[in-house]
Length: 473
Image (cartoon, rainbow, N blue to C red; front, side, top):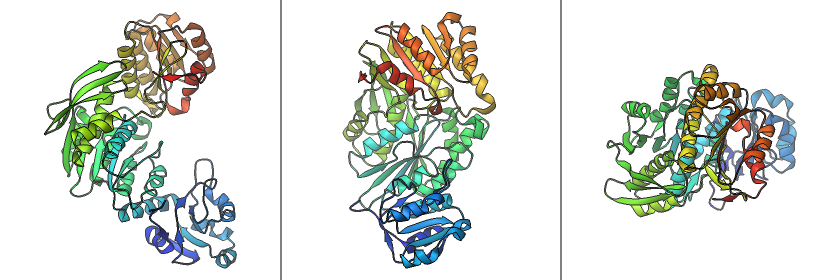
């Protein structure tokens, strides 16, 4: 990038506390990379151990591509031809743990950047909230935003490395599946603003209980910079309880009268929602092109961030209305046969599943509603009961057919039948068999919700129904 922040070897040593094995302390690098396939000449390559590959195995490949600096683990230094590195002026820095070093480099980058940081966490809606917040902030500021699902100890550093001298704000997303992770990520990005969207039944396998989720998400509050602000959803009782532990200023958003940033009179408008955005000093009408009452809540969190940063109501409105959800996040598609698909396949947990089902019911009107559901992951000992509860919700809802795939499909089916669906309305099977059944039984005008956890690959059913001919409705 034209205005990127360069890295010197001395910066790398200061950030990581590593040992210089070879090379020049004044050597300058133009970026940091961890993927040997994407590394560029004059990058610094950090050899991390991934789930399937160890970056140390690709050090020779990166040097062949012109990489002039390597960060590696001390236990791997015995494999190196350091004399060759010295001769070719390749910088080698040894650390005890390269994933920790990656985070240390990211923290160093954040501290020397002039940008302010908004960090977003929550059980549901954090990616959409991050997207809307970025769209709002971009109306007035040069803004960096997390891309994709770069929200963990590897992804967040890759985002922070993109900070340039031009950026005024960064909007980042913090994910977790174990206690302590939000605290680590929060310290890494040291936010001026922290947003908690909600507390729900997600990642129970790692944290044990809903109280564990609350405690884990609340770790963000301790990492907000002195003089910063926590933006909290006061419609969520657990988030409201967390606010009592905030040492920073708190700005509430929601529908409640406790909120400084409120959403008033939400109403369906086509496939979207219109509501009045109420700020402390003005009100303005906002049109969302995407469905779901929860989307209003996400928009209010973004509006609160914009308000804090000094944007006008008009600028906030433009930013909210200009946002488009990422693929697999409440996208509404219509096939050439007139079948409406709600593609919410990116991920799932019990709360987001309930919200999606309610959204289907609100959109379908008098048309047929069909649910196509896959397993929800990371629920631990609660998994069977929570899948059965989702089935029960489906059984009590006004739907015509329920298709279920995954290890807990029988639990979902049992819950649905117990609450009123006939056995012939509930179909379990593989993704492939469900797709074939859908192709036979779907009719023009039907509304179909497709949802499941990421690893279930439910988007293959969306693609199978559309044959690549979907258009945004």
